Length: 274
Image (cartoon, rainbow, N blue to C red; front, side, top):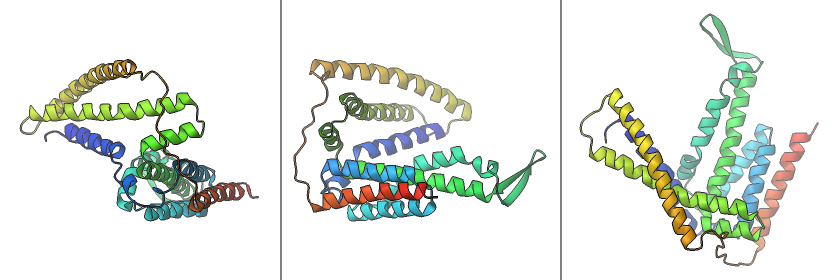
C-alpha cells in the first residue's frame, strides 16, 4: 500500500462496508435480538427522542448507561459499538468546538492569538461536552438498532408500522446502493495500488487522488444506472414488499416499550421543569 490518500480511502471504505455488511451480532442470542423488530424500532427511537429532549448531564448520563446496558444484554461488544459510533460525535465536537471560547463564562485558560486574547470558559466547555455526549448516545442507539436487527426486518417493521412507502423505498434503495458504492471504491483503490510501487510524493498523490475521484464518480453512476435497469426489469419499480415474520409480543417487549415511554416523559419533564 502506497500513499496516504490511498491508505485513507481503503481504510474508510473497509470500515464503512463492515458497518453495513456485518450482521453477525444480529444472528446471536441476546435481549434485543429476541424482541419484535417493531418494538425494537419504536423503543430505541423513543430513547433517541429522549436524548434529543435532554438538557441536563444527569439525563444524558442515564440514557448512556441504558444504552450500554442494552448492549451488554444483547451480547454486543462495547469496543465494536464504540468504534461504530465514534466518528459522528467527533465530527460534531469539531463543529461546535468554537463555542468553548465564544460562550461567556468563567475563564479556565487563555492564550493570545495574533494579539487577540482567547479564553476557554467553563460554560463553553460544558456545552461542547454536553452536545458531544448527546450526539454519541443518539448515534450509539442507532448503531445498536442496526447491529441487533437485520435490515430486512427493519424494513418489514416500518411497513407494518405504516411508515410512508416512499420513505421505506428510499431507505431500501440507499442501503442496497451503499454496498455498490463502497465495493466500487475498494476495487479502484486496489487497482491503483497494484500499479504503484515505492513511495509516492505529495504531487503524485494529489494527481492520483484527482484521477481516482473522477473515475469513481463515472463508474458509480454507470454501475448505478445498470443496477437500476436490472431492478426495473425484475419488477423493482414496485414498492418494497419485504417478508416479515410475525411473532407474538411478550412481556419483555412491553417492558422495553414502557422504559422508552418513561424515558421520553422523564426527559421532557426534566427539560421543562422551572
